[in-house]
Image (cartoon, rainbow, N blue to C red; front, side):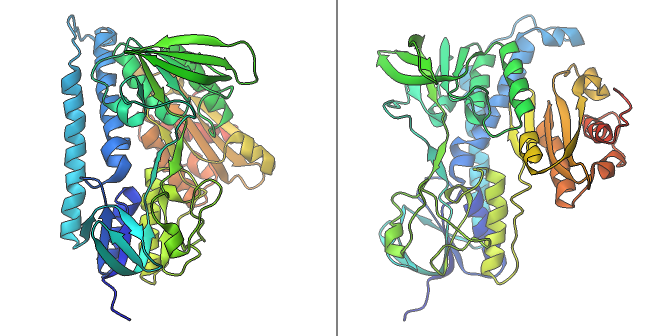
Length: 464
């Protein structure tokens, strides 16, 4: 049998894929990465995490200046104008810099970029463009794409998906977001801040499915306070486009009288699905589960020896940082080391204002497993948040009633996305609420709220 072209071939250059390729190369394995996009980085860097955060940050600053909030701090901004083209330009610049950075890292680590769509031709062979290569190990890291809404056509003009919502050429007068999940709320927040009326239509009775119940309720209050219209327990049964306008037909999720809603932009954001079609999995002897995902074992092996899978194409949360950790772990497993990811401690963040973050079990999940105790601390009582005029939100710590081990942490705060890292690290080391309560935190910082919430679990908070 002929020699292999590569020790490792990674299909897909998203967060999990490019990290797996670089780590494998660092471990001395001859590595290639197949990617059909013109730039590396997958959805995250090109049309997901990075460009959306660029717009979120810019729109936050615009709203802060345009709303007059800065005047309370002694900063007068009598004339504030939106330059949407410039806002888009800085988004594009951020993407260009980071995707170019991945290409530089590939060259530095001697990872070969195979440009083109990859399709299996056998258990150890893949055709990329016009070239067929063999690899001893193949890692599937093709990520995910937008889940379509049956009967609704996305034209990327009036009816858009998350990619189209990043590139709207003008501020819509009325944007309807179908789906009250993370992506819909983040992009809805961007356009609301720069002047759009935003209506969110969610099938369930609360926003943010899968998050802690208290977080979901509080999020609804905050978004209403900010001016979003929320239509909960409501389903979209049809979208009709006429020129540059759309008419949506809605009805209660449980059934009932229909109503119509007019909009000049509609964002379909009802979730994502694994990118497994077009890979030729059958040629490799692989199949998918009912959700279109590839099943793996604890070490990221598929049912076919030598083929591995990570990230959004496998069961679990579709998060870039989860994929990155899996990318490192799978490369180390291939190299004969021990690569492990603790899937019980994967933080999640919603980059709205304030940010919303959580790690571990929700209070509802924890109660199902046994007796718990909780502690909660409001951000309005945190000195740094109060000084910064950021009173909204709180931190909640959930601990086992007997062992005091922390089971979950949920928070709503301006910097919750950063604060949650300490909670994840504490849980990784098996921390108790007492451990956190007696850890000295710098003052004045937002993270003191985490300490105080842990103290509340112990029944001895100081500032409430």
